Image (spheres, rainbow, N blue to C red):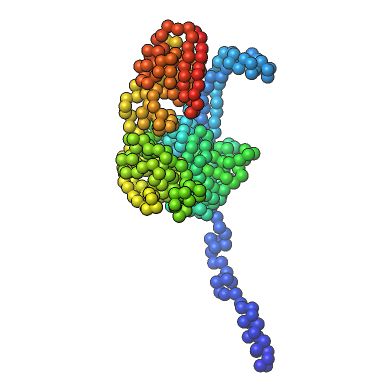
Length: 461
């Protein structure tokens, strides 16, 4: 008997029985199954389908069927209108019909039709759009008491959180896919003409999902789905969404009646601090953005920063790339102040920076030429505002081509060209262009700076 009891005790010691917590029987349906149905039920009605049309002039060539002559006579033939259709998604963010979508879905549309989850349809117009951010704000006509999503503070999102992507992929109808936040602060990407800062997710996103909602498990809007990284055209589990904090800044400007999205102006150039640079600068680890150039009017310069300083945070949020700096500034908006944290000589410092629009001075001197050899040419004198609008280098000075049509386009001029000389006459102000263009000459020579390269355009009248 004693031996049997000893064997029983030894067995219990070597093979412990499961605890009560491990063997408890589920007591409710919620404990038996995991479902996102309540989240979808509350969030899906606020996600809409968007049908946009645009009329474009397409050149019809009689050589279209011949591959050789079609290339040879590419600009030959008459133009006729053609309707382009696009399909995407959007998110209602206010009960009176304010919808957020992507610029590449509706930014250049002539007519926009929005269809709700319950099949109600509304005509819409663009209130505010911005290609660089790939965002657009729409207003539905005669809409009221609509379902909408509230915006979450996207700075509080963490990698690994569960998220749902809701949209209209491939036009099959509203679809929900589930995944996690795979990464934050994805920058350096150029998507549909926009450059920005994104949330990465592995929730399946496909064509047609653009402009749809990325929501958390509480049904709050985390971001606007904008693009996928793919080689096949389908989802490979690498999707990108524009953070809700930037969407919030867009909504504030749209409601204020702005016609163009205004970003706070930094007036600086910078680059990512890599391991080699961190070692050369005596930093403990690679972090932040080192300032390489500051405009004389830059608010960062006014706050005491200088070339060589390393910006590591704005408003208490880390900044590890130039795109992240611009995202932080854009989401804060113009008119307030924020704290910039930076490193200088190995010491951490802080300063208050004003969030301001780029100065529109000296005057831009906008000038459009008519009835001259360069008819259709629009030029402006460079200042901080013009450089910011056209994404031109801080150090560029002089007169830039804002638009080129008619004779100016045929001469080979393009928006963004910096005019250096026209027929040997140096161009420093807008009026210099007018004087040069009025000259009587059959042969013309124009020197320009385009994308950092010097070019000489020659033509004969």
